Length: 320
Image (cartoon, rainbow, N blue to C red; front, side, top):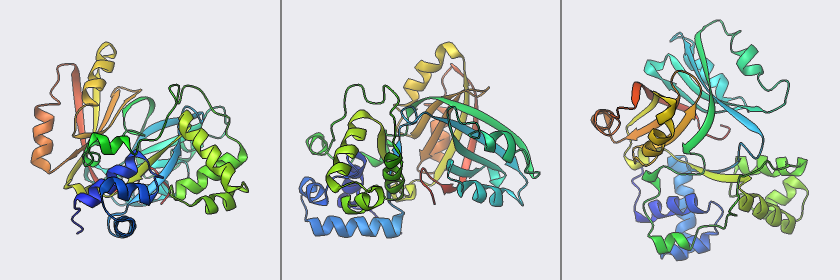
């Protein structure tokens, strides 16, 4: 398996800071040649599943997100998970808990009459599904545009400052009226967040200058953000688990804020339901996960914790 060195880690960190930064600028920050950075990027894509993708901010795009737990028979769980992963309205599809539970994010559009079809019609018709629970995602404390800390510790503060793109103070504060061409732009960037301006112009029918201007507007306003997908095993992670927690509402914000500072967690989100706090833990091994659960996560305000080991990830944030 690929063992990342300082250049690899620096490149991954740089892409998290500015996914579309020119390779020439990344090379200058890393103190190496552009050819080296291009070659390392290609190797990470081929051997570690590196993908740069653009995603619309859910609030700006008037999208709702549901965390869905499905329990199915061991014989059919893999098939159901694969079918969910192929849908355009799903993300983060994982097999957990011995391979009989599926966790997925389902995205719906506010006001659309058919947006809840998967939740209300399609899943209940699947006879091999024995249990379903849906949790509306209320607030994300960690995740989305905020990367897991294990990936973003390679660059110094001066190096980071050379790469951070500008974002307006009211980014994500209001809904954005995405045009048809905006949706074409987003579709292209969802497939490849580093697609060239020439390719993006061809997909949208805009000129390269118009693509540049619109992309800059959407990024500065928080209308879209970029994510970097890569195999976490590259960072020594062998134990991954989804944590379902129950916290009294009066303590929820405080607990979630504390957990969002934990380096073991990649996602922390408040949801509806009896387990109203969701987290995704990434640990070196099962012993490290046990240590985390019994020490740092042992907070009095958390009245219940259910740990669901992740056996396989079938889909990240982007289409497969």
